[in-house]
Length: 269
Image (tube, rainbow, N blue to C red; front, top):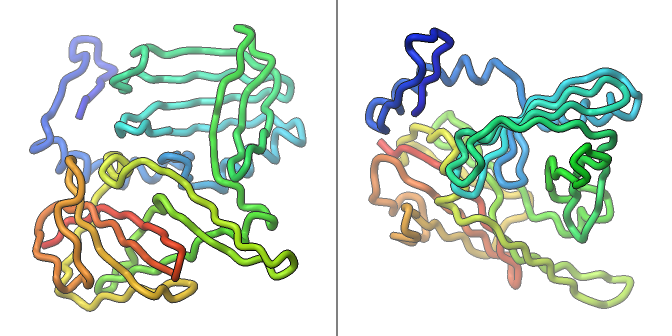
């Protein structure tokens, strides 16, 4: 954890993981109060703020969007976009990106384009002073035409806690009765250990009652435990899990020829 101070004589300092984690937990409620869009590899939190931002642009209303995008390695990049009804003032702070330029970059652009490619929607700033486009977001389509290929949602409850999960890679087959053809959609994704680098773990006790349900019940479910190197254990039920402390849990559901994954970060007491 890097601590920045606005007191000139203090500058900044660092805390290692042992001391940084409890401090982060104390700050988390304050961080959550500040509403901004969070982009974790194409999955958005506070998505309604981005939707309102798009509506304001369409109506030529002055608006502001604050967003944090996380890299594959889990480093945050902070975006601030101001729209005055005619053009966009963009600030990109990548000082915490290990592979970035370690600077705060500023751009002026005139347009935000929506580009659909397959199952993805790219939101790109164009008409920028530098003469190139700037990608703001890349998200999966959720239009009516794509809902046939949407994987089932999961509801994961431990004790009285509902556990937030993130969709990972999947291979999904759907039959089109009008053509008699089966279409398979496959998506790649960051590995579970990379996905969870920027996610706060949830404290749980897997000895408490556990309930996992899906929109459509799978034929089989497996549970993979990951660490930074990869999968370390595979179980057929949560009751079998032996690992305690921080764990990355990947839930793998099978629906005949289809397969979908859901990922979360836990601290098992």
